[in-house]
Image 1 (tube, rainbow, N blue to C red):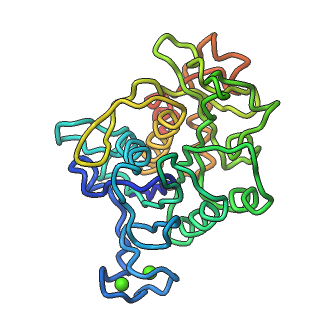
Image 2: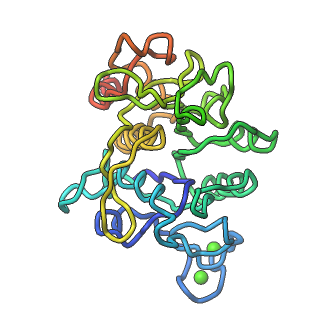
Length: 289
Ligand code: CA
Ligand code: CA
């Protein structure tokens, strides 16, 4: 199985559509107050809360955003509710809460710490459904120097929710130019980017569905949510599915598989680097050639 780190709000790990898909730190004995694996985190069985510096990774309603993305990536396939792009037989989700409060804010330091935790504890792919106008050299370095593949949301426009060109007005980490980053815009069902989706012929690699996406939320429930935060997990799930079938490939190959097989759409030309939308089936076929 492939390990996907979700650096976001927390995730409701008890949700019936998610409970089997959650990463378990096998080297940690739960609840004994001891850091059994000596990784610096006590009782980190499924991940860590970098906001409150604790092992409490679901704090309730404020964790809707991360729980929603988790369902898109890996909700159970035979459980009613929804189905993820992949499921627990192929992927495990490492829960890294770095965003909190009613507005889901986080500090660069928390995110950097979460990235380092993810890599040190065996994550392959990392979903980052957030962005900021500001970036620090330390934050850039944490992504640049990581061996993980990052799938990043392009962002949801300005204060009026009108998408803008992040080649000209960068958003981080979406605009970072590194080979281990895939940036995703929000595709509307009419084949255009959603009006709110940021774009960029260099910075935004492809688009994936992100508007009116039904997925899991805390309390064993479901809700529709919209934005590039919902589009990025589609690509993360695809990357995890493909990588789980072909772990002999490099994560760079997985990126190439996804980007070289997009379904081209005229409205995405000039707004994304590939001019297309995610095509999971075509990406899987690419890896078989
Ligand atoms: Ca530990
Ligand atoms: Ca322990």
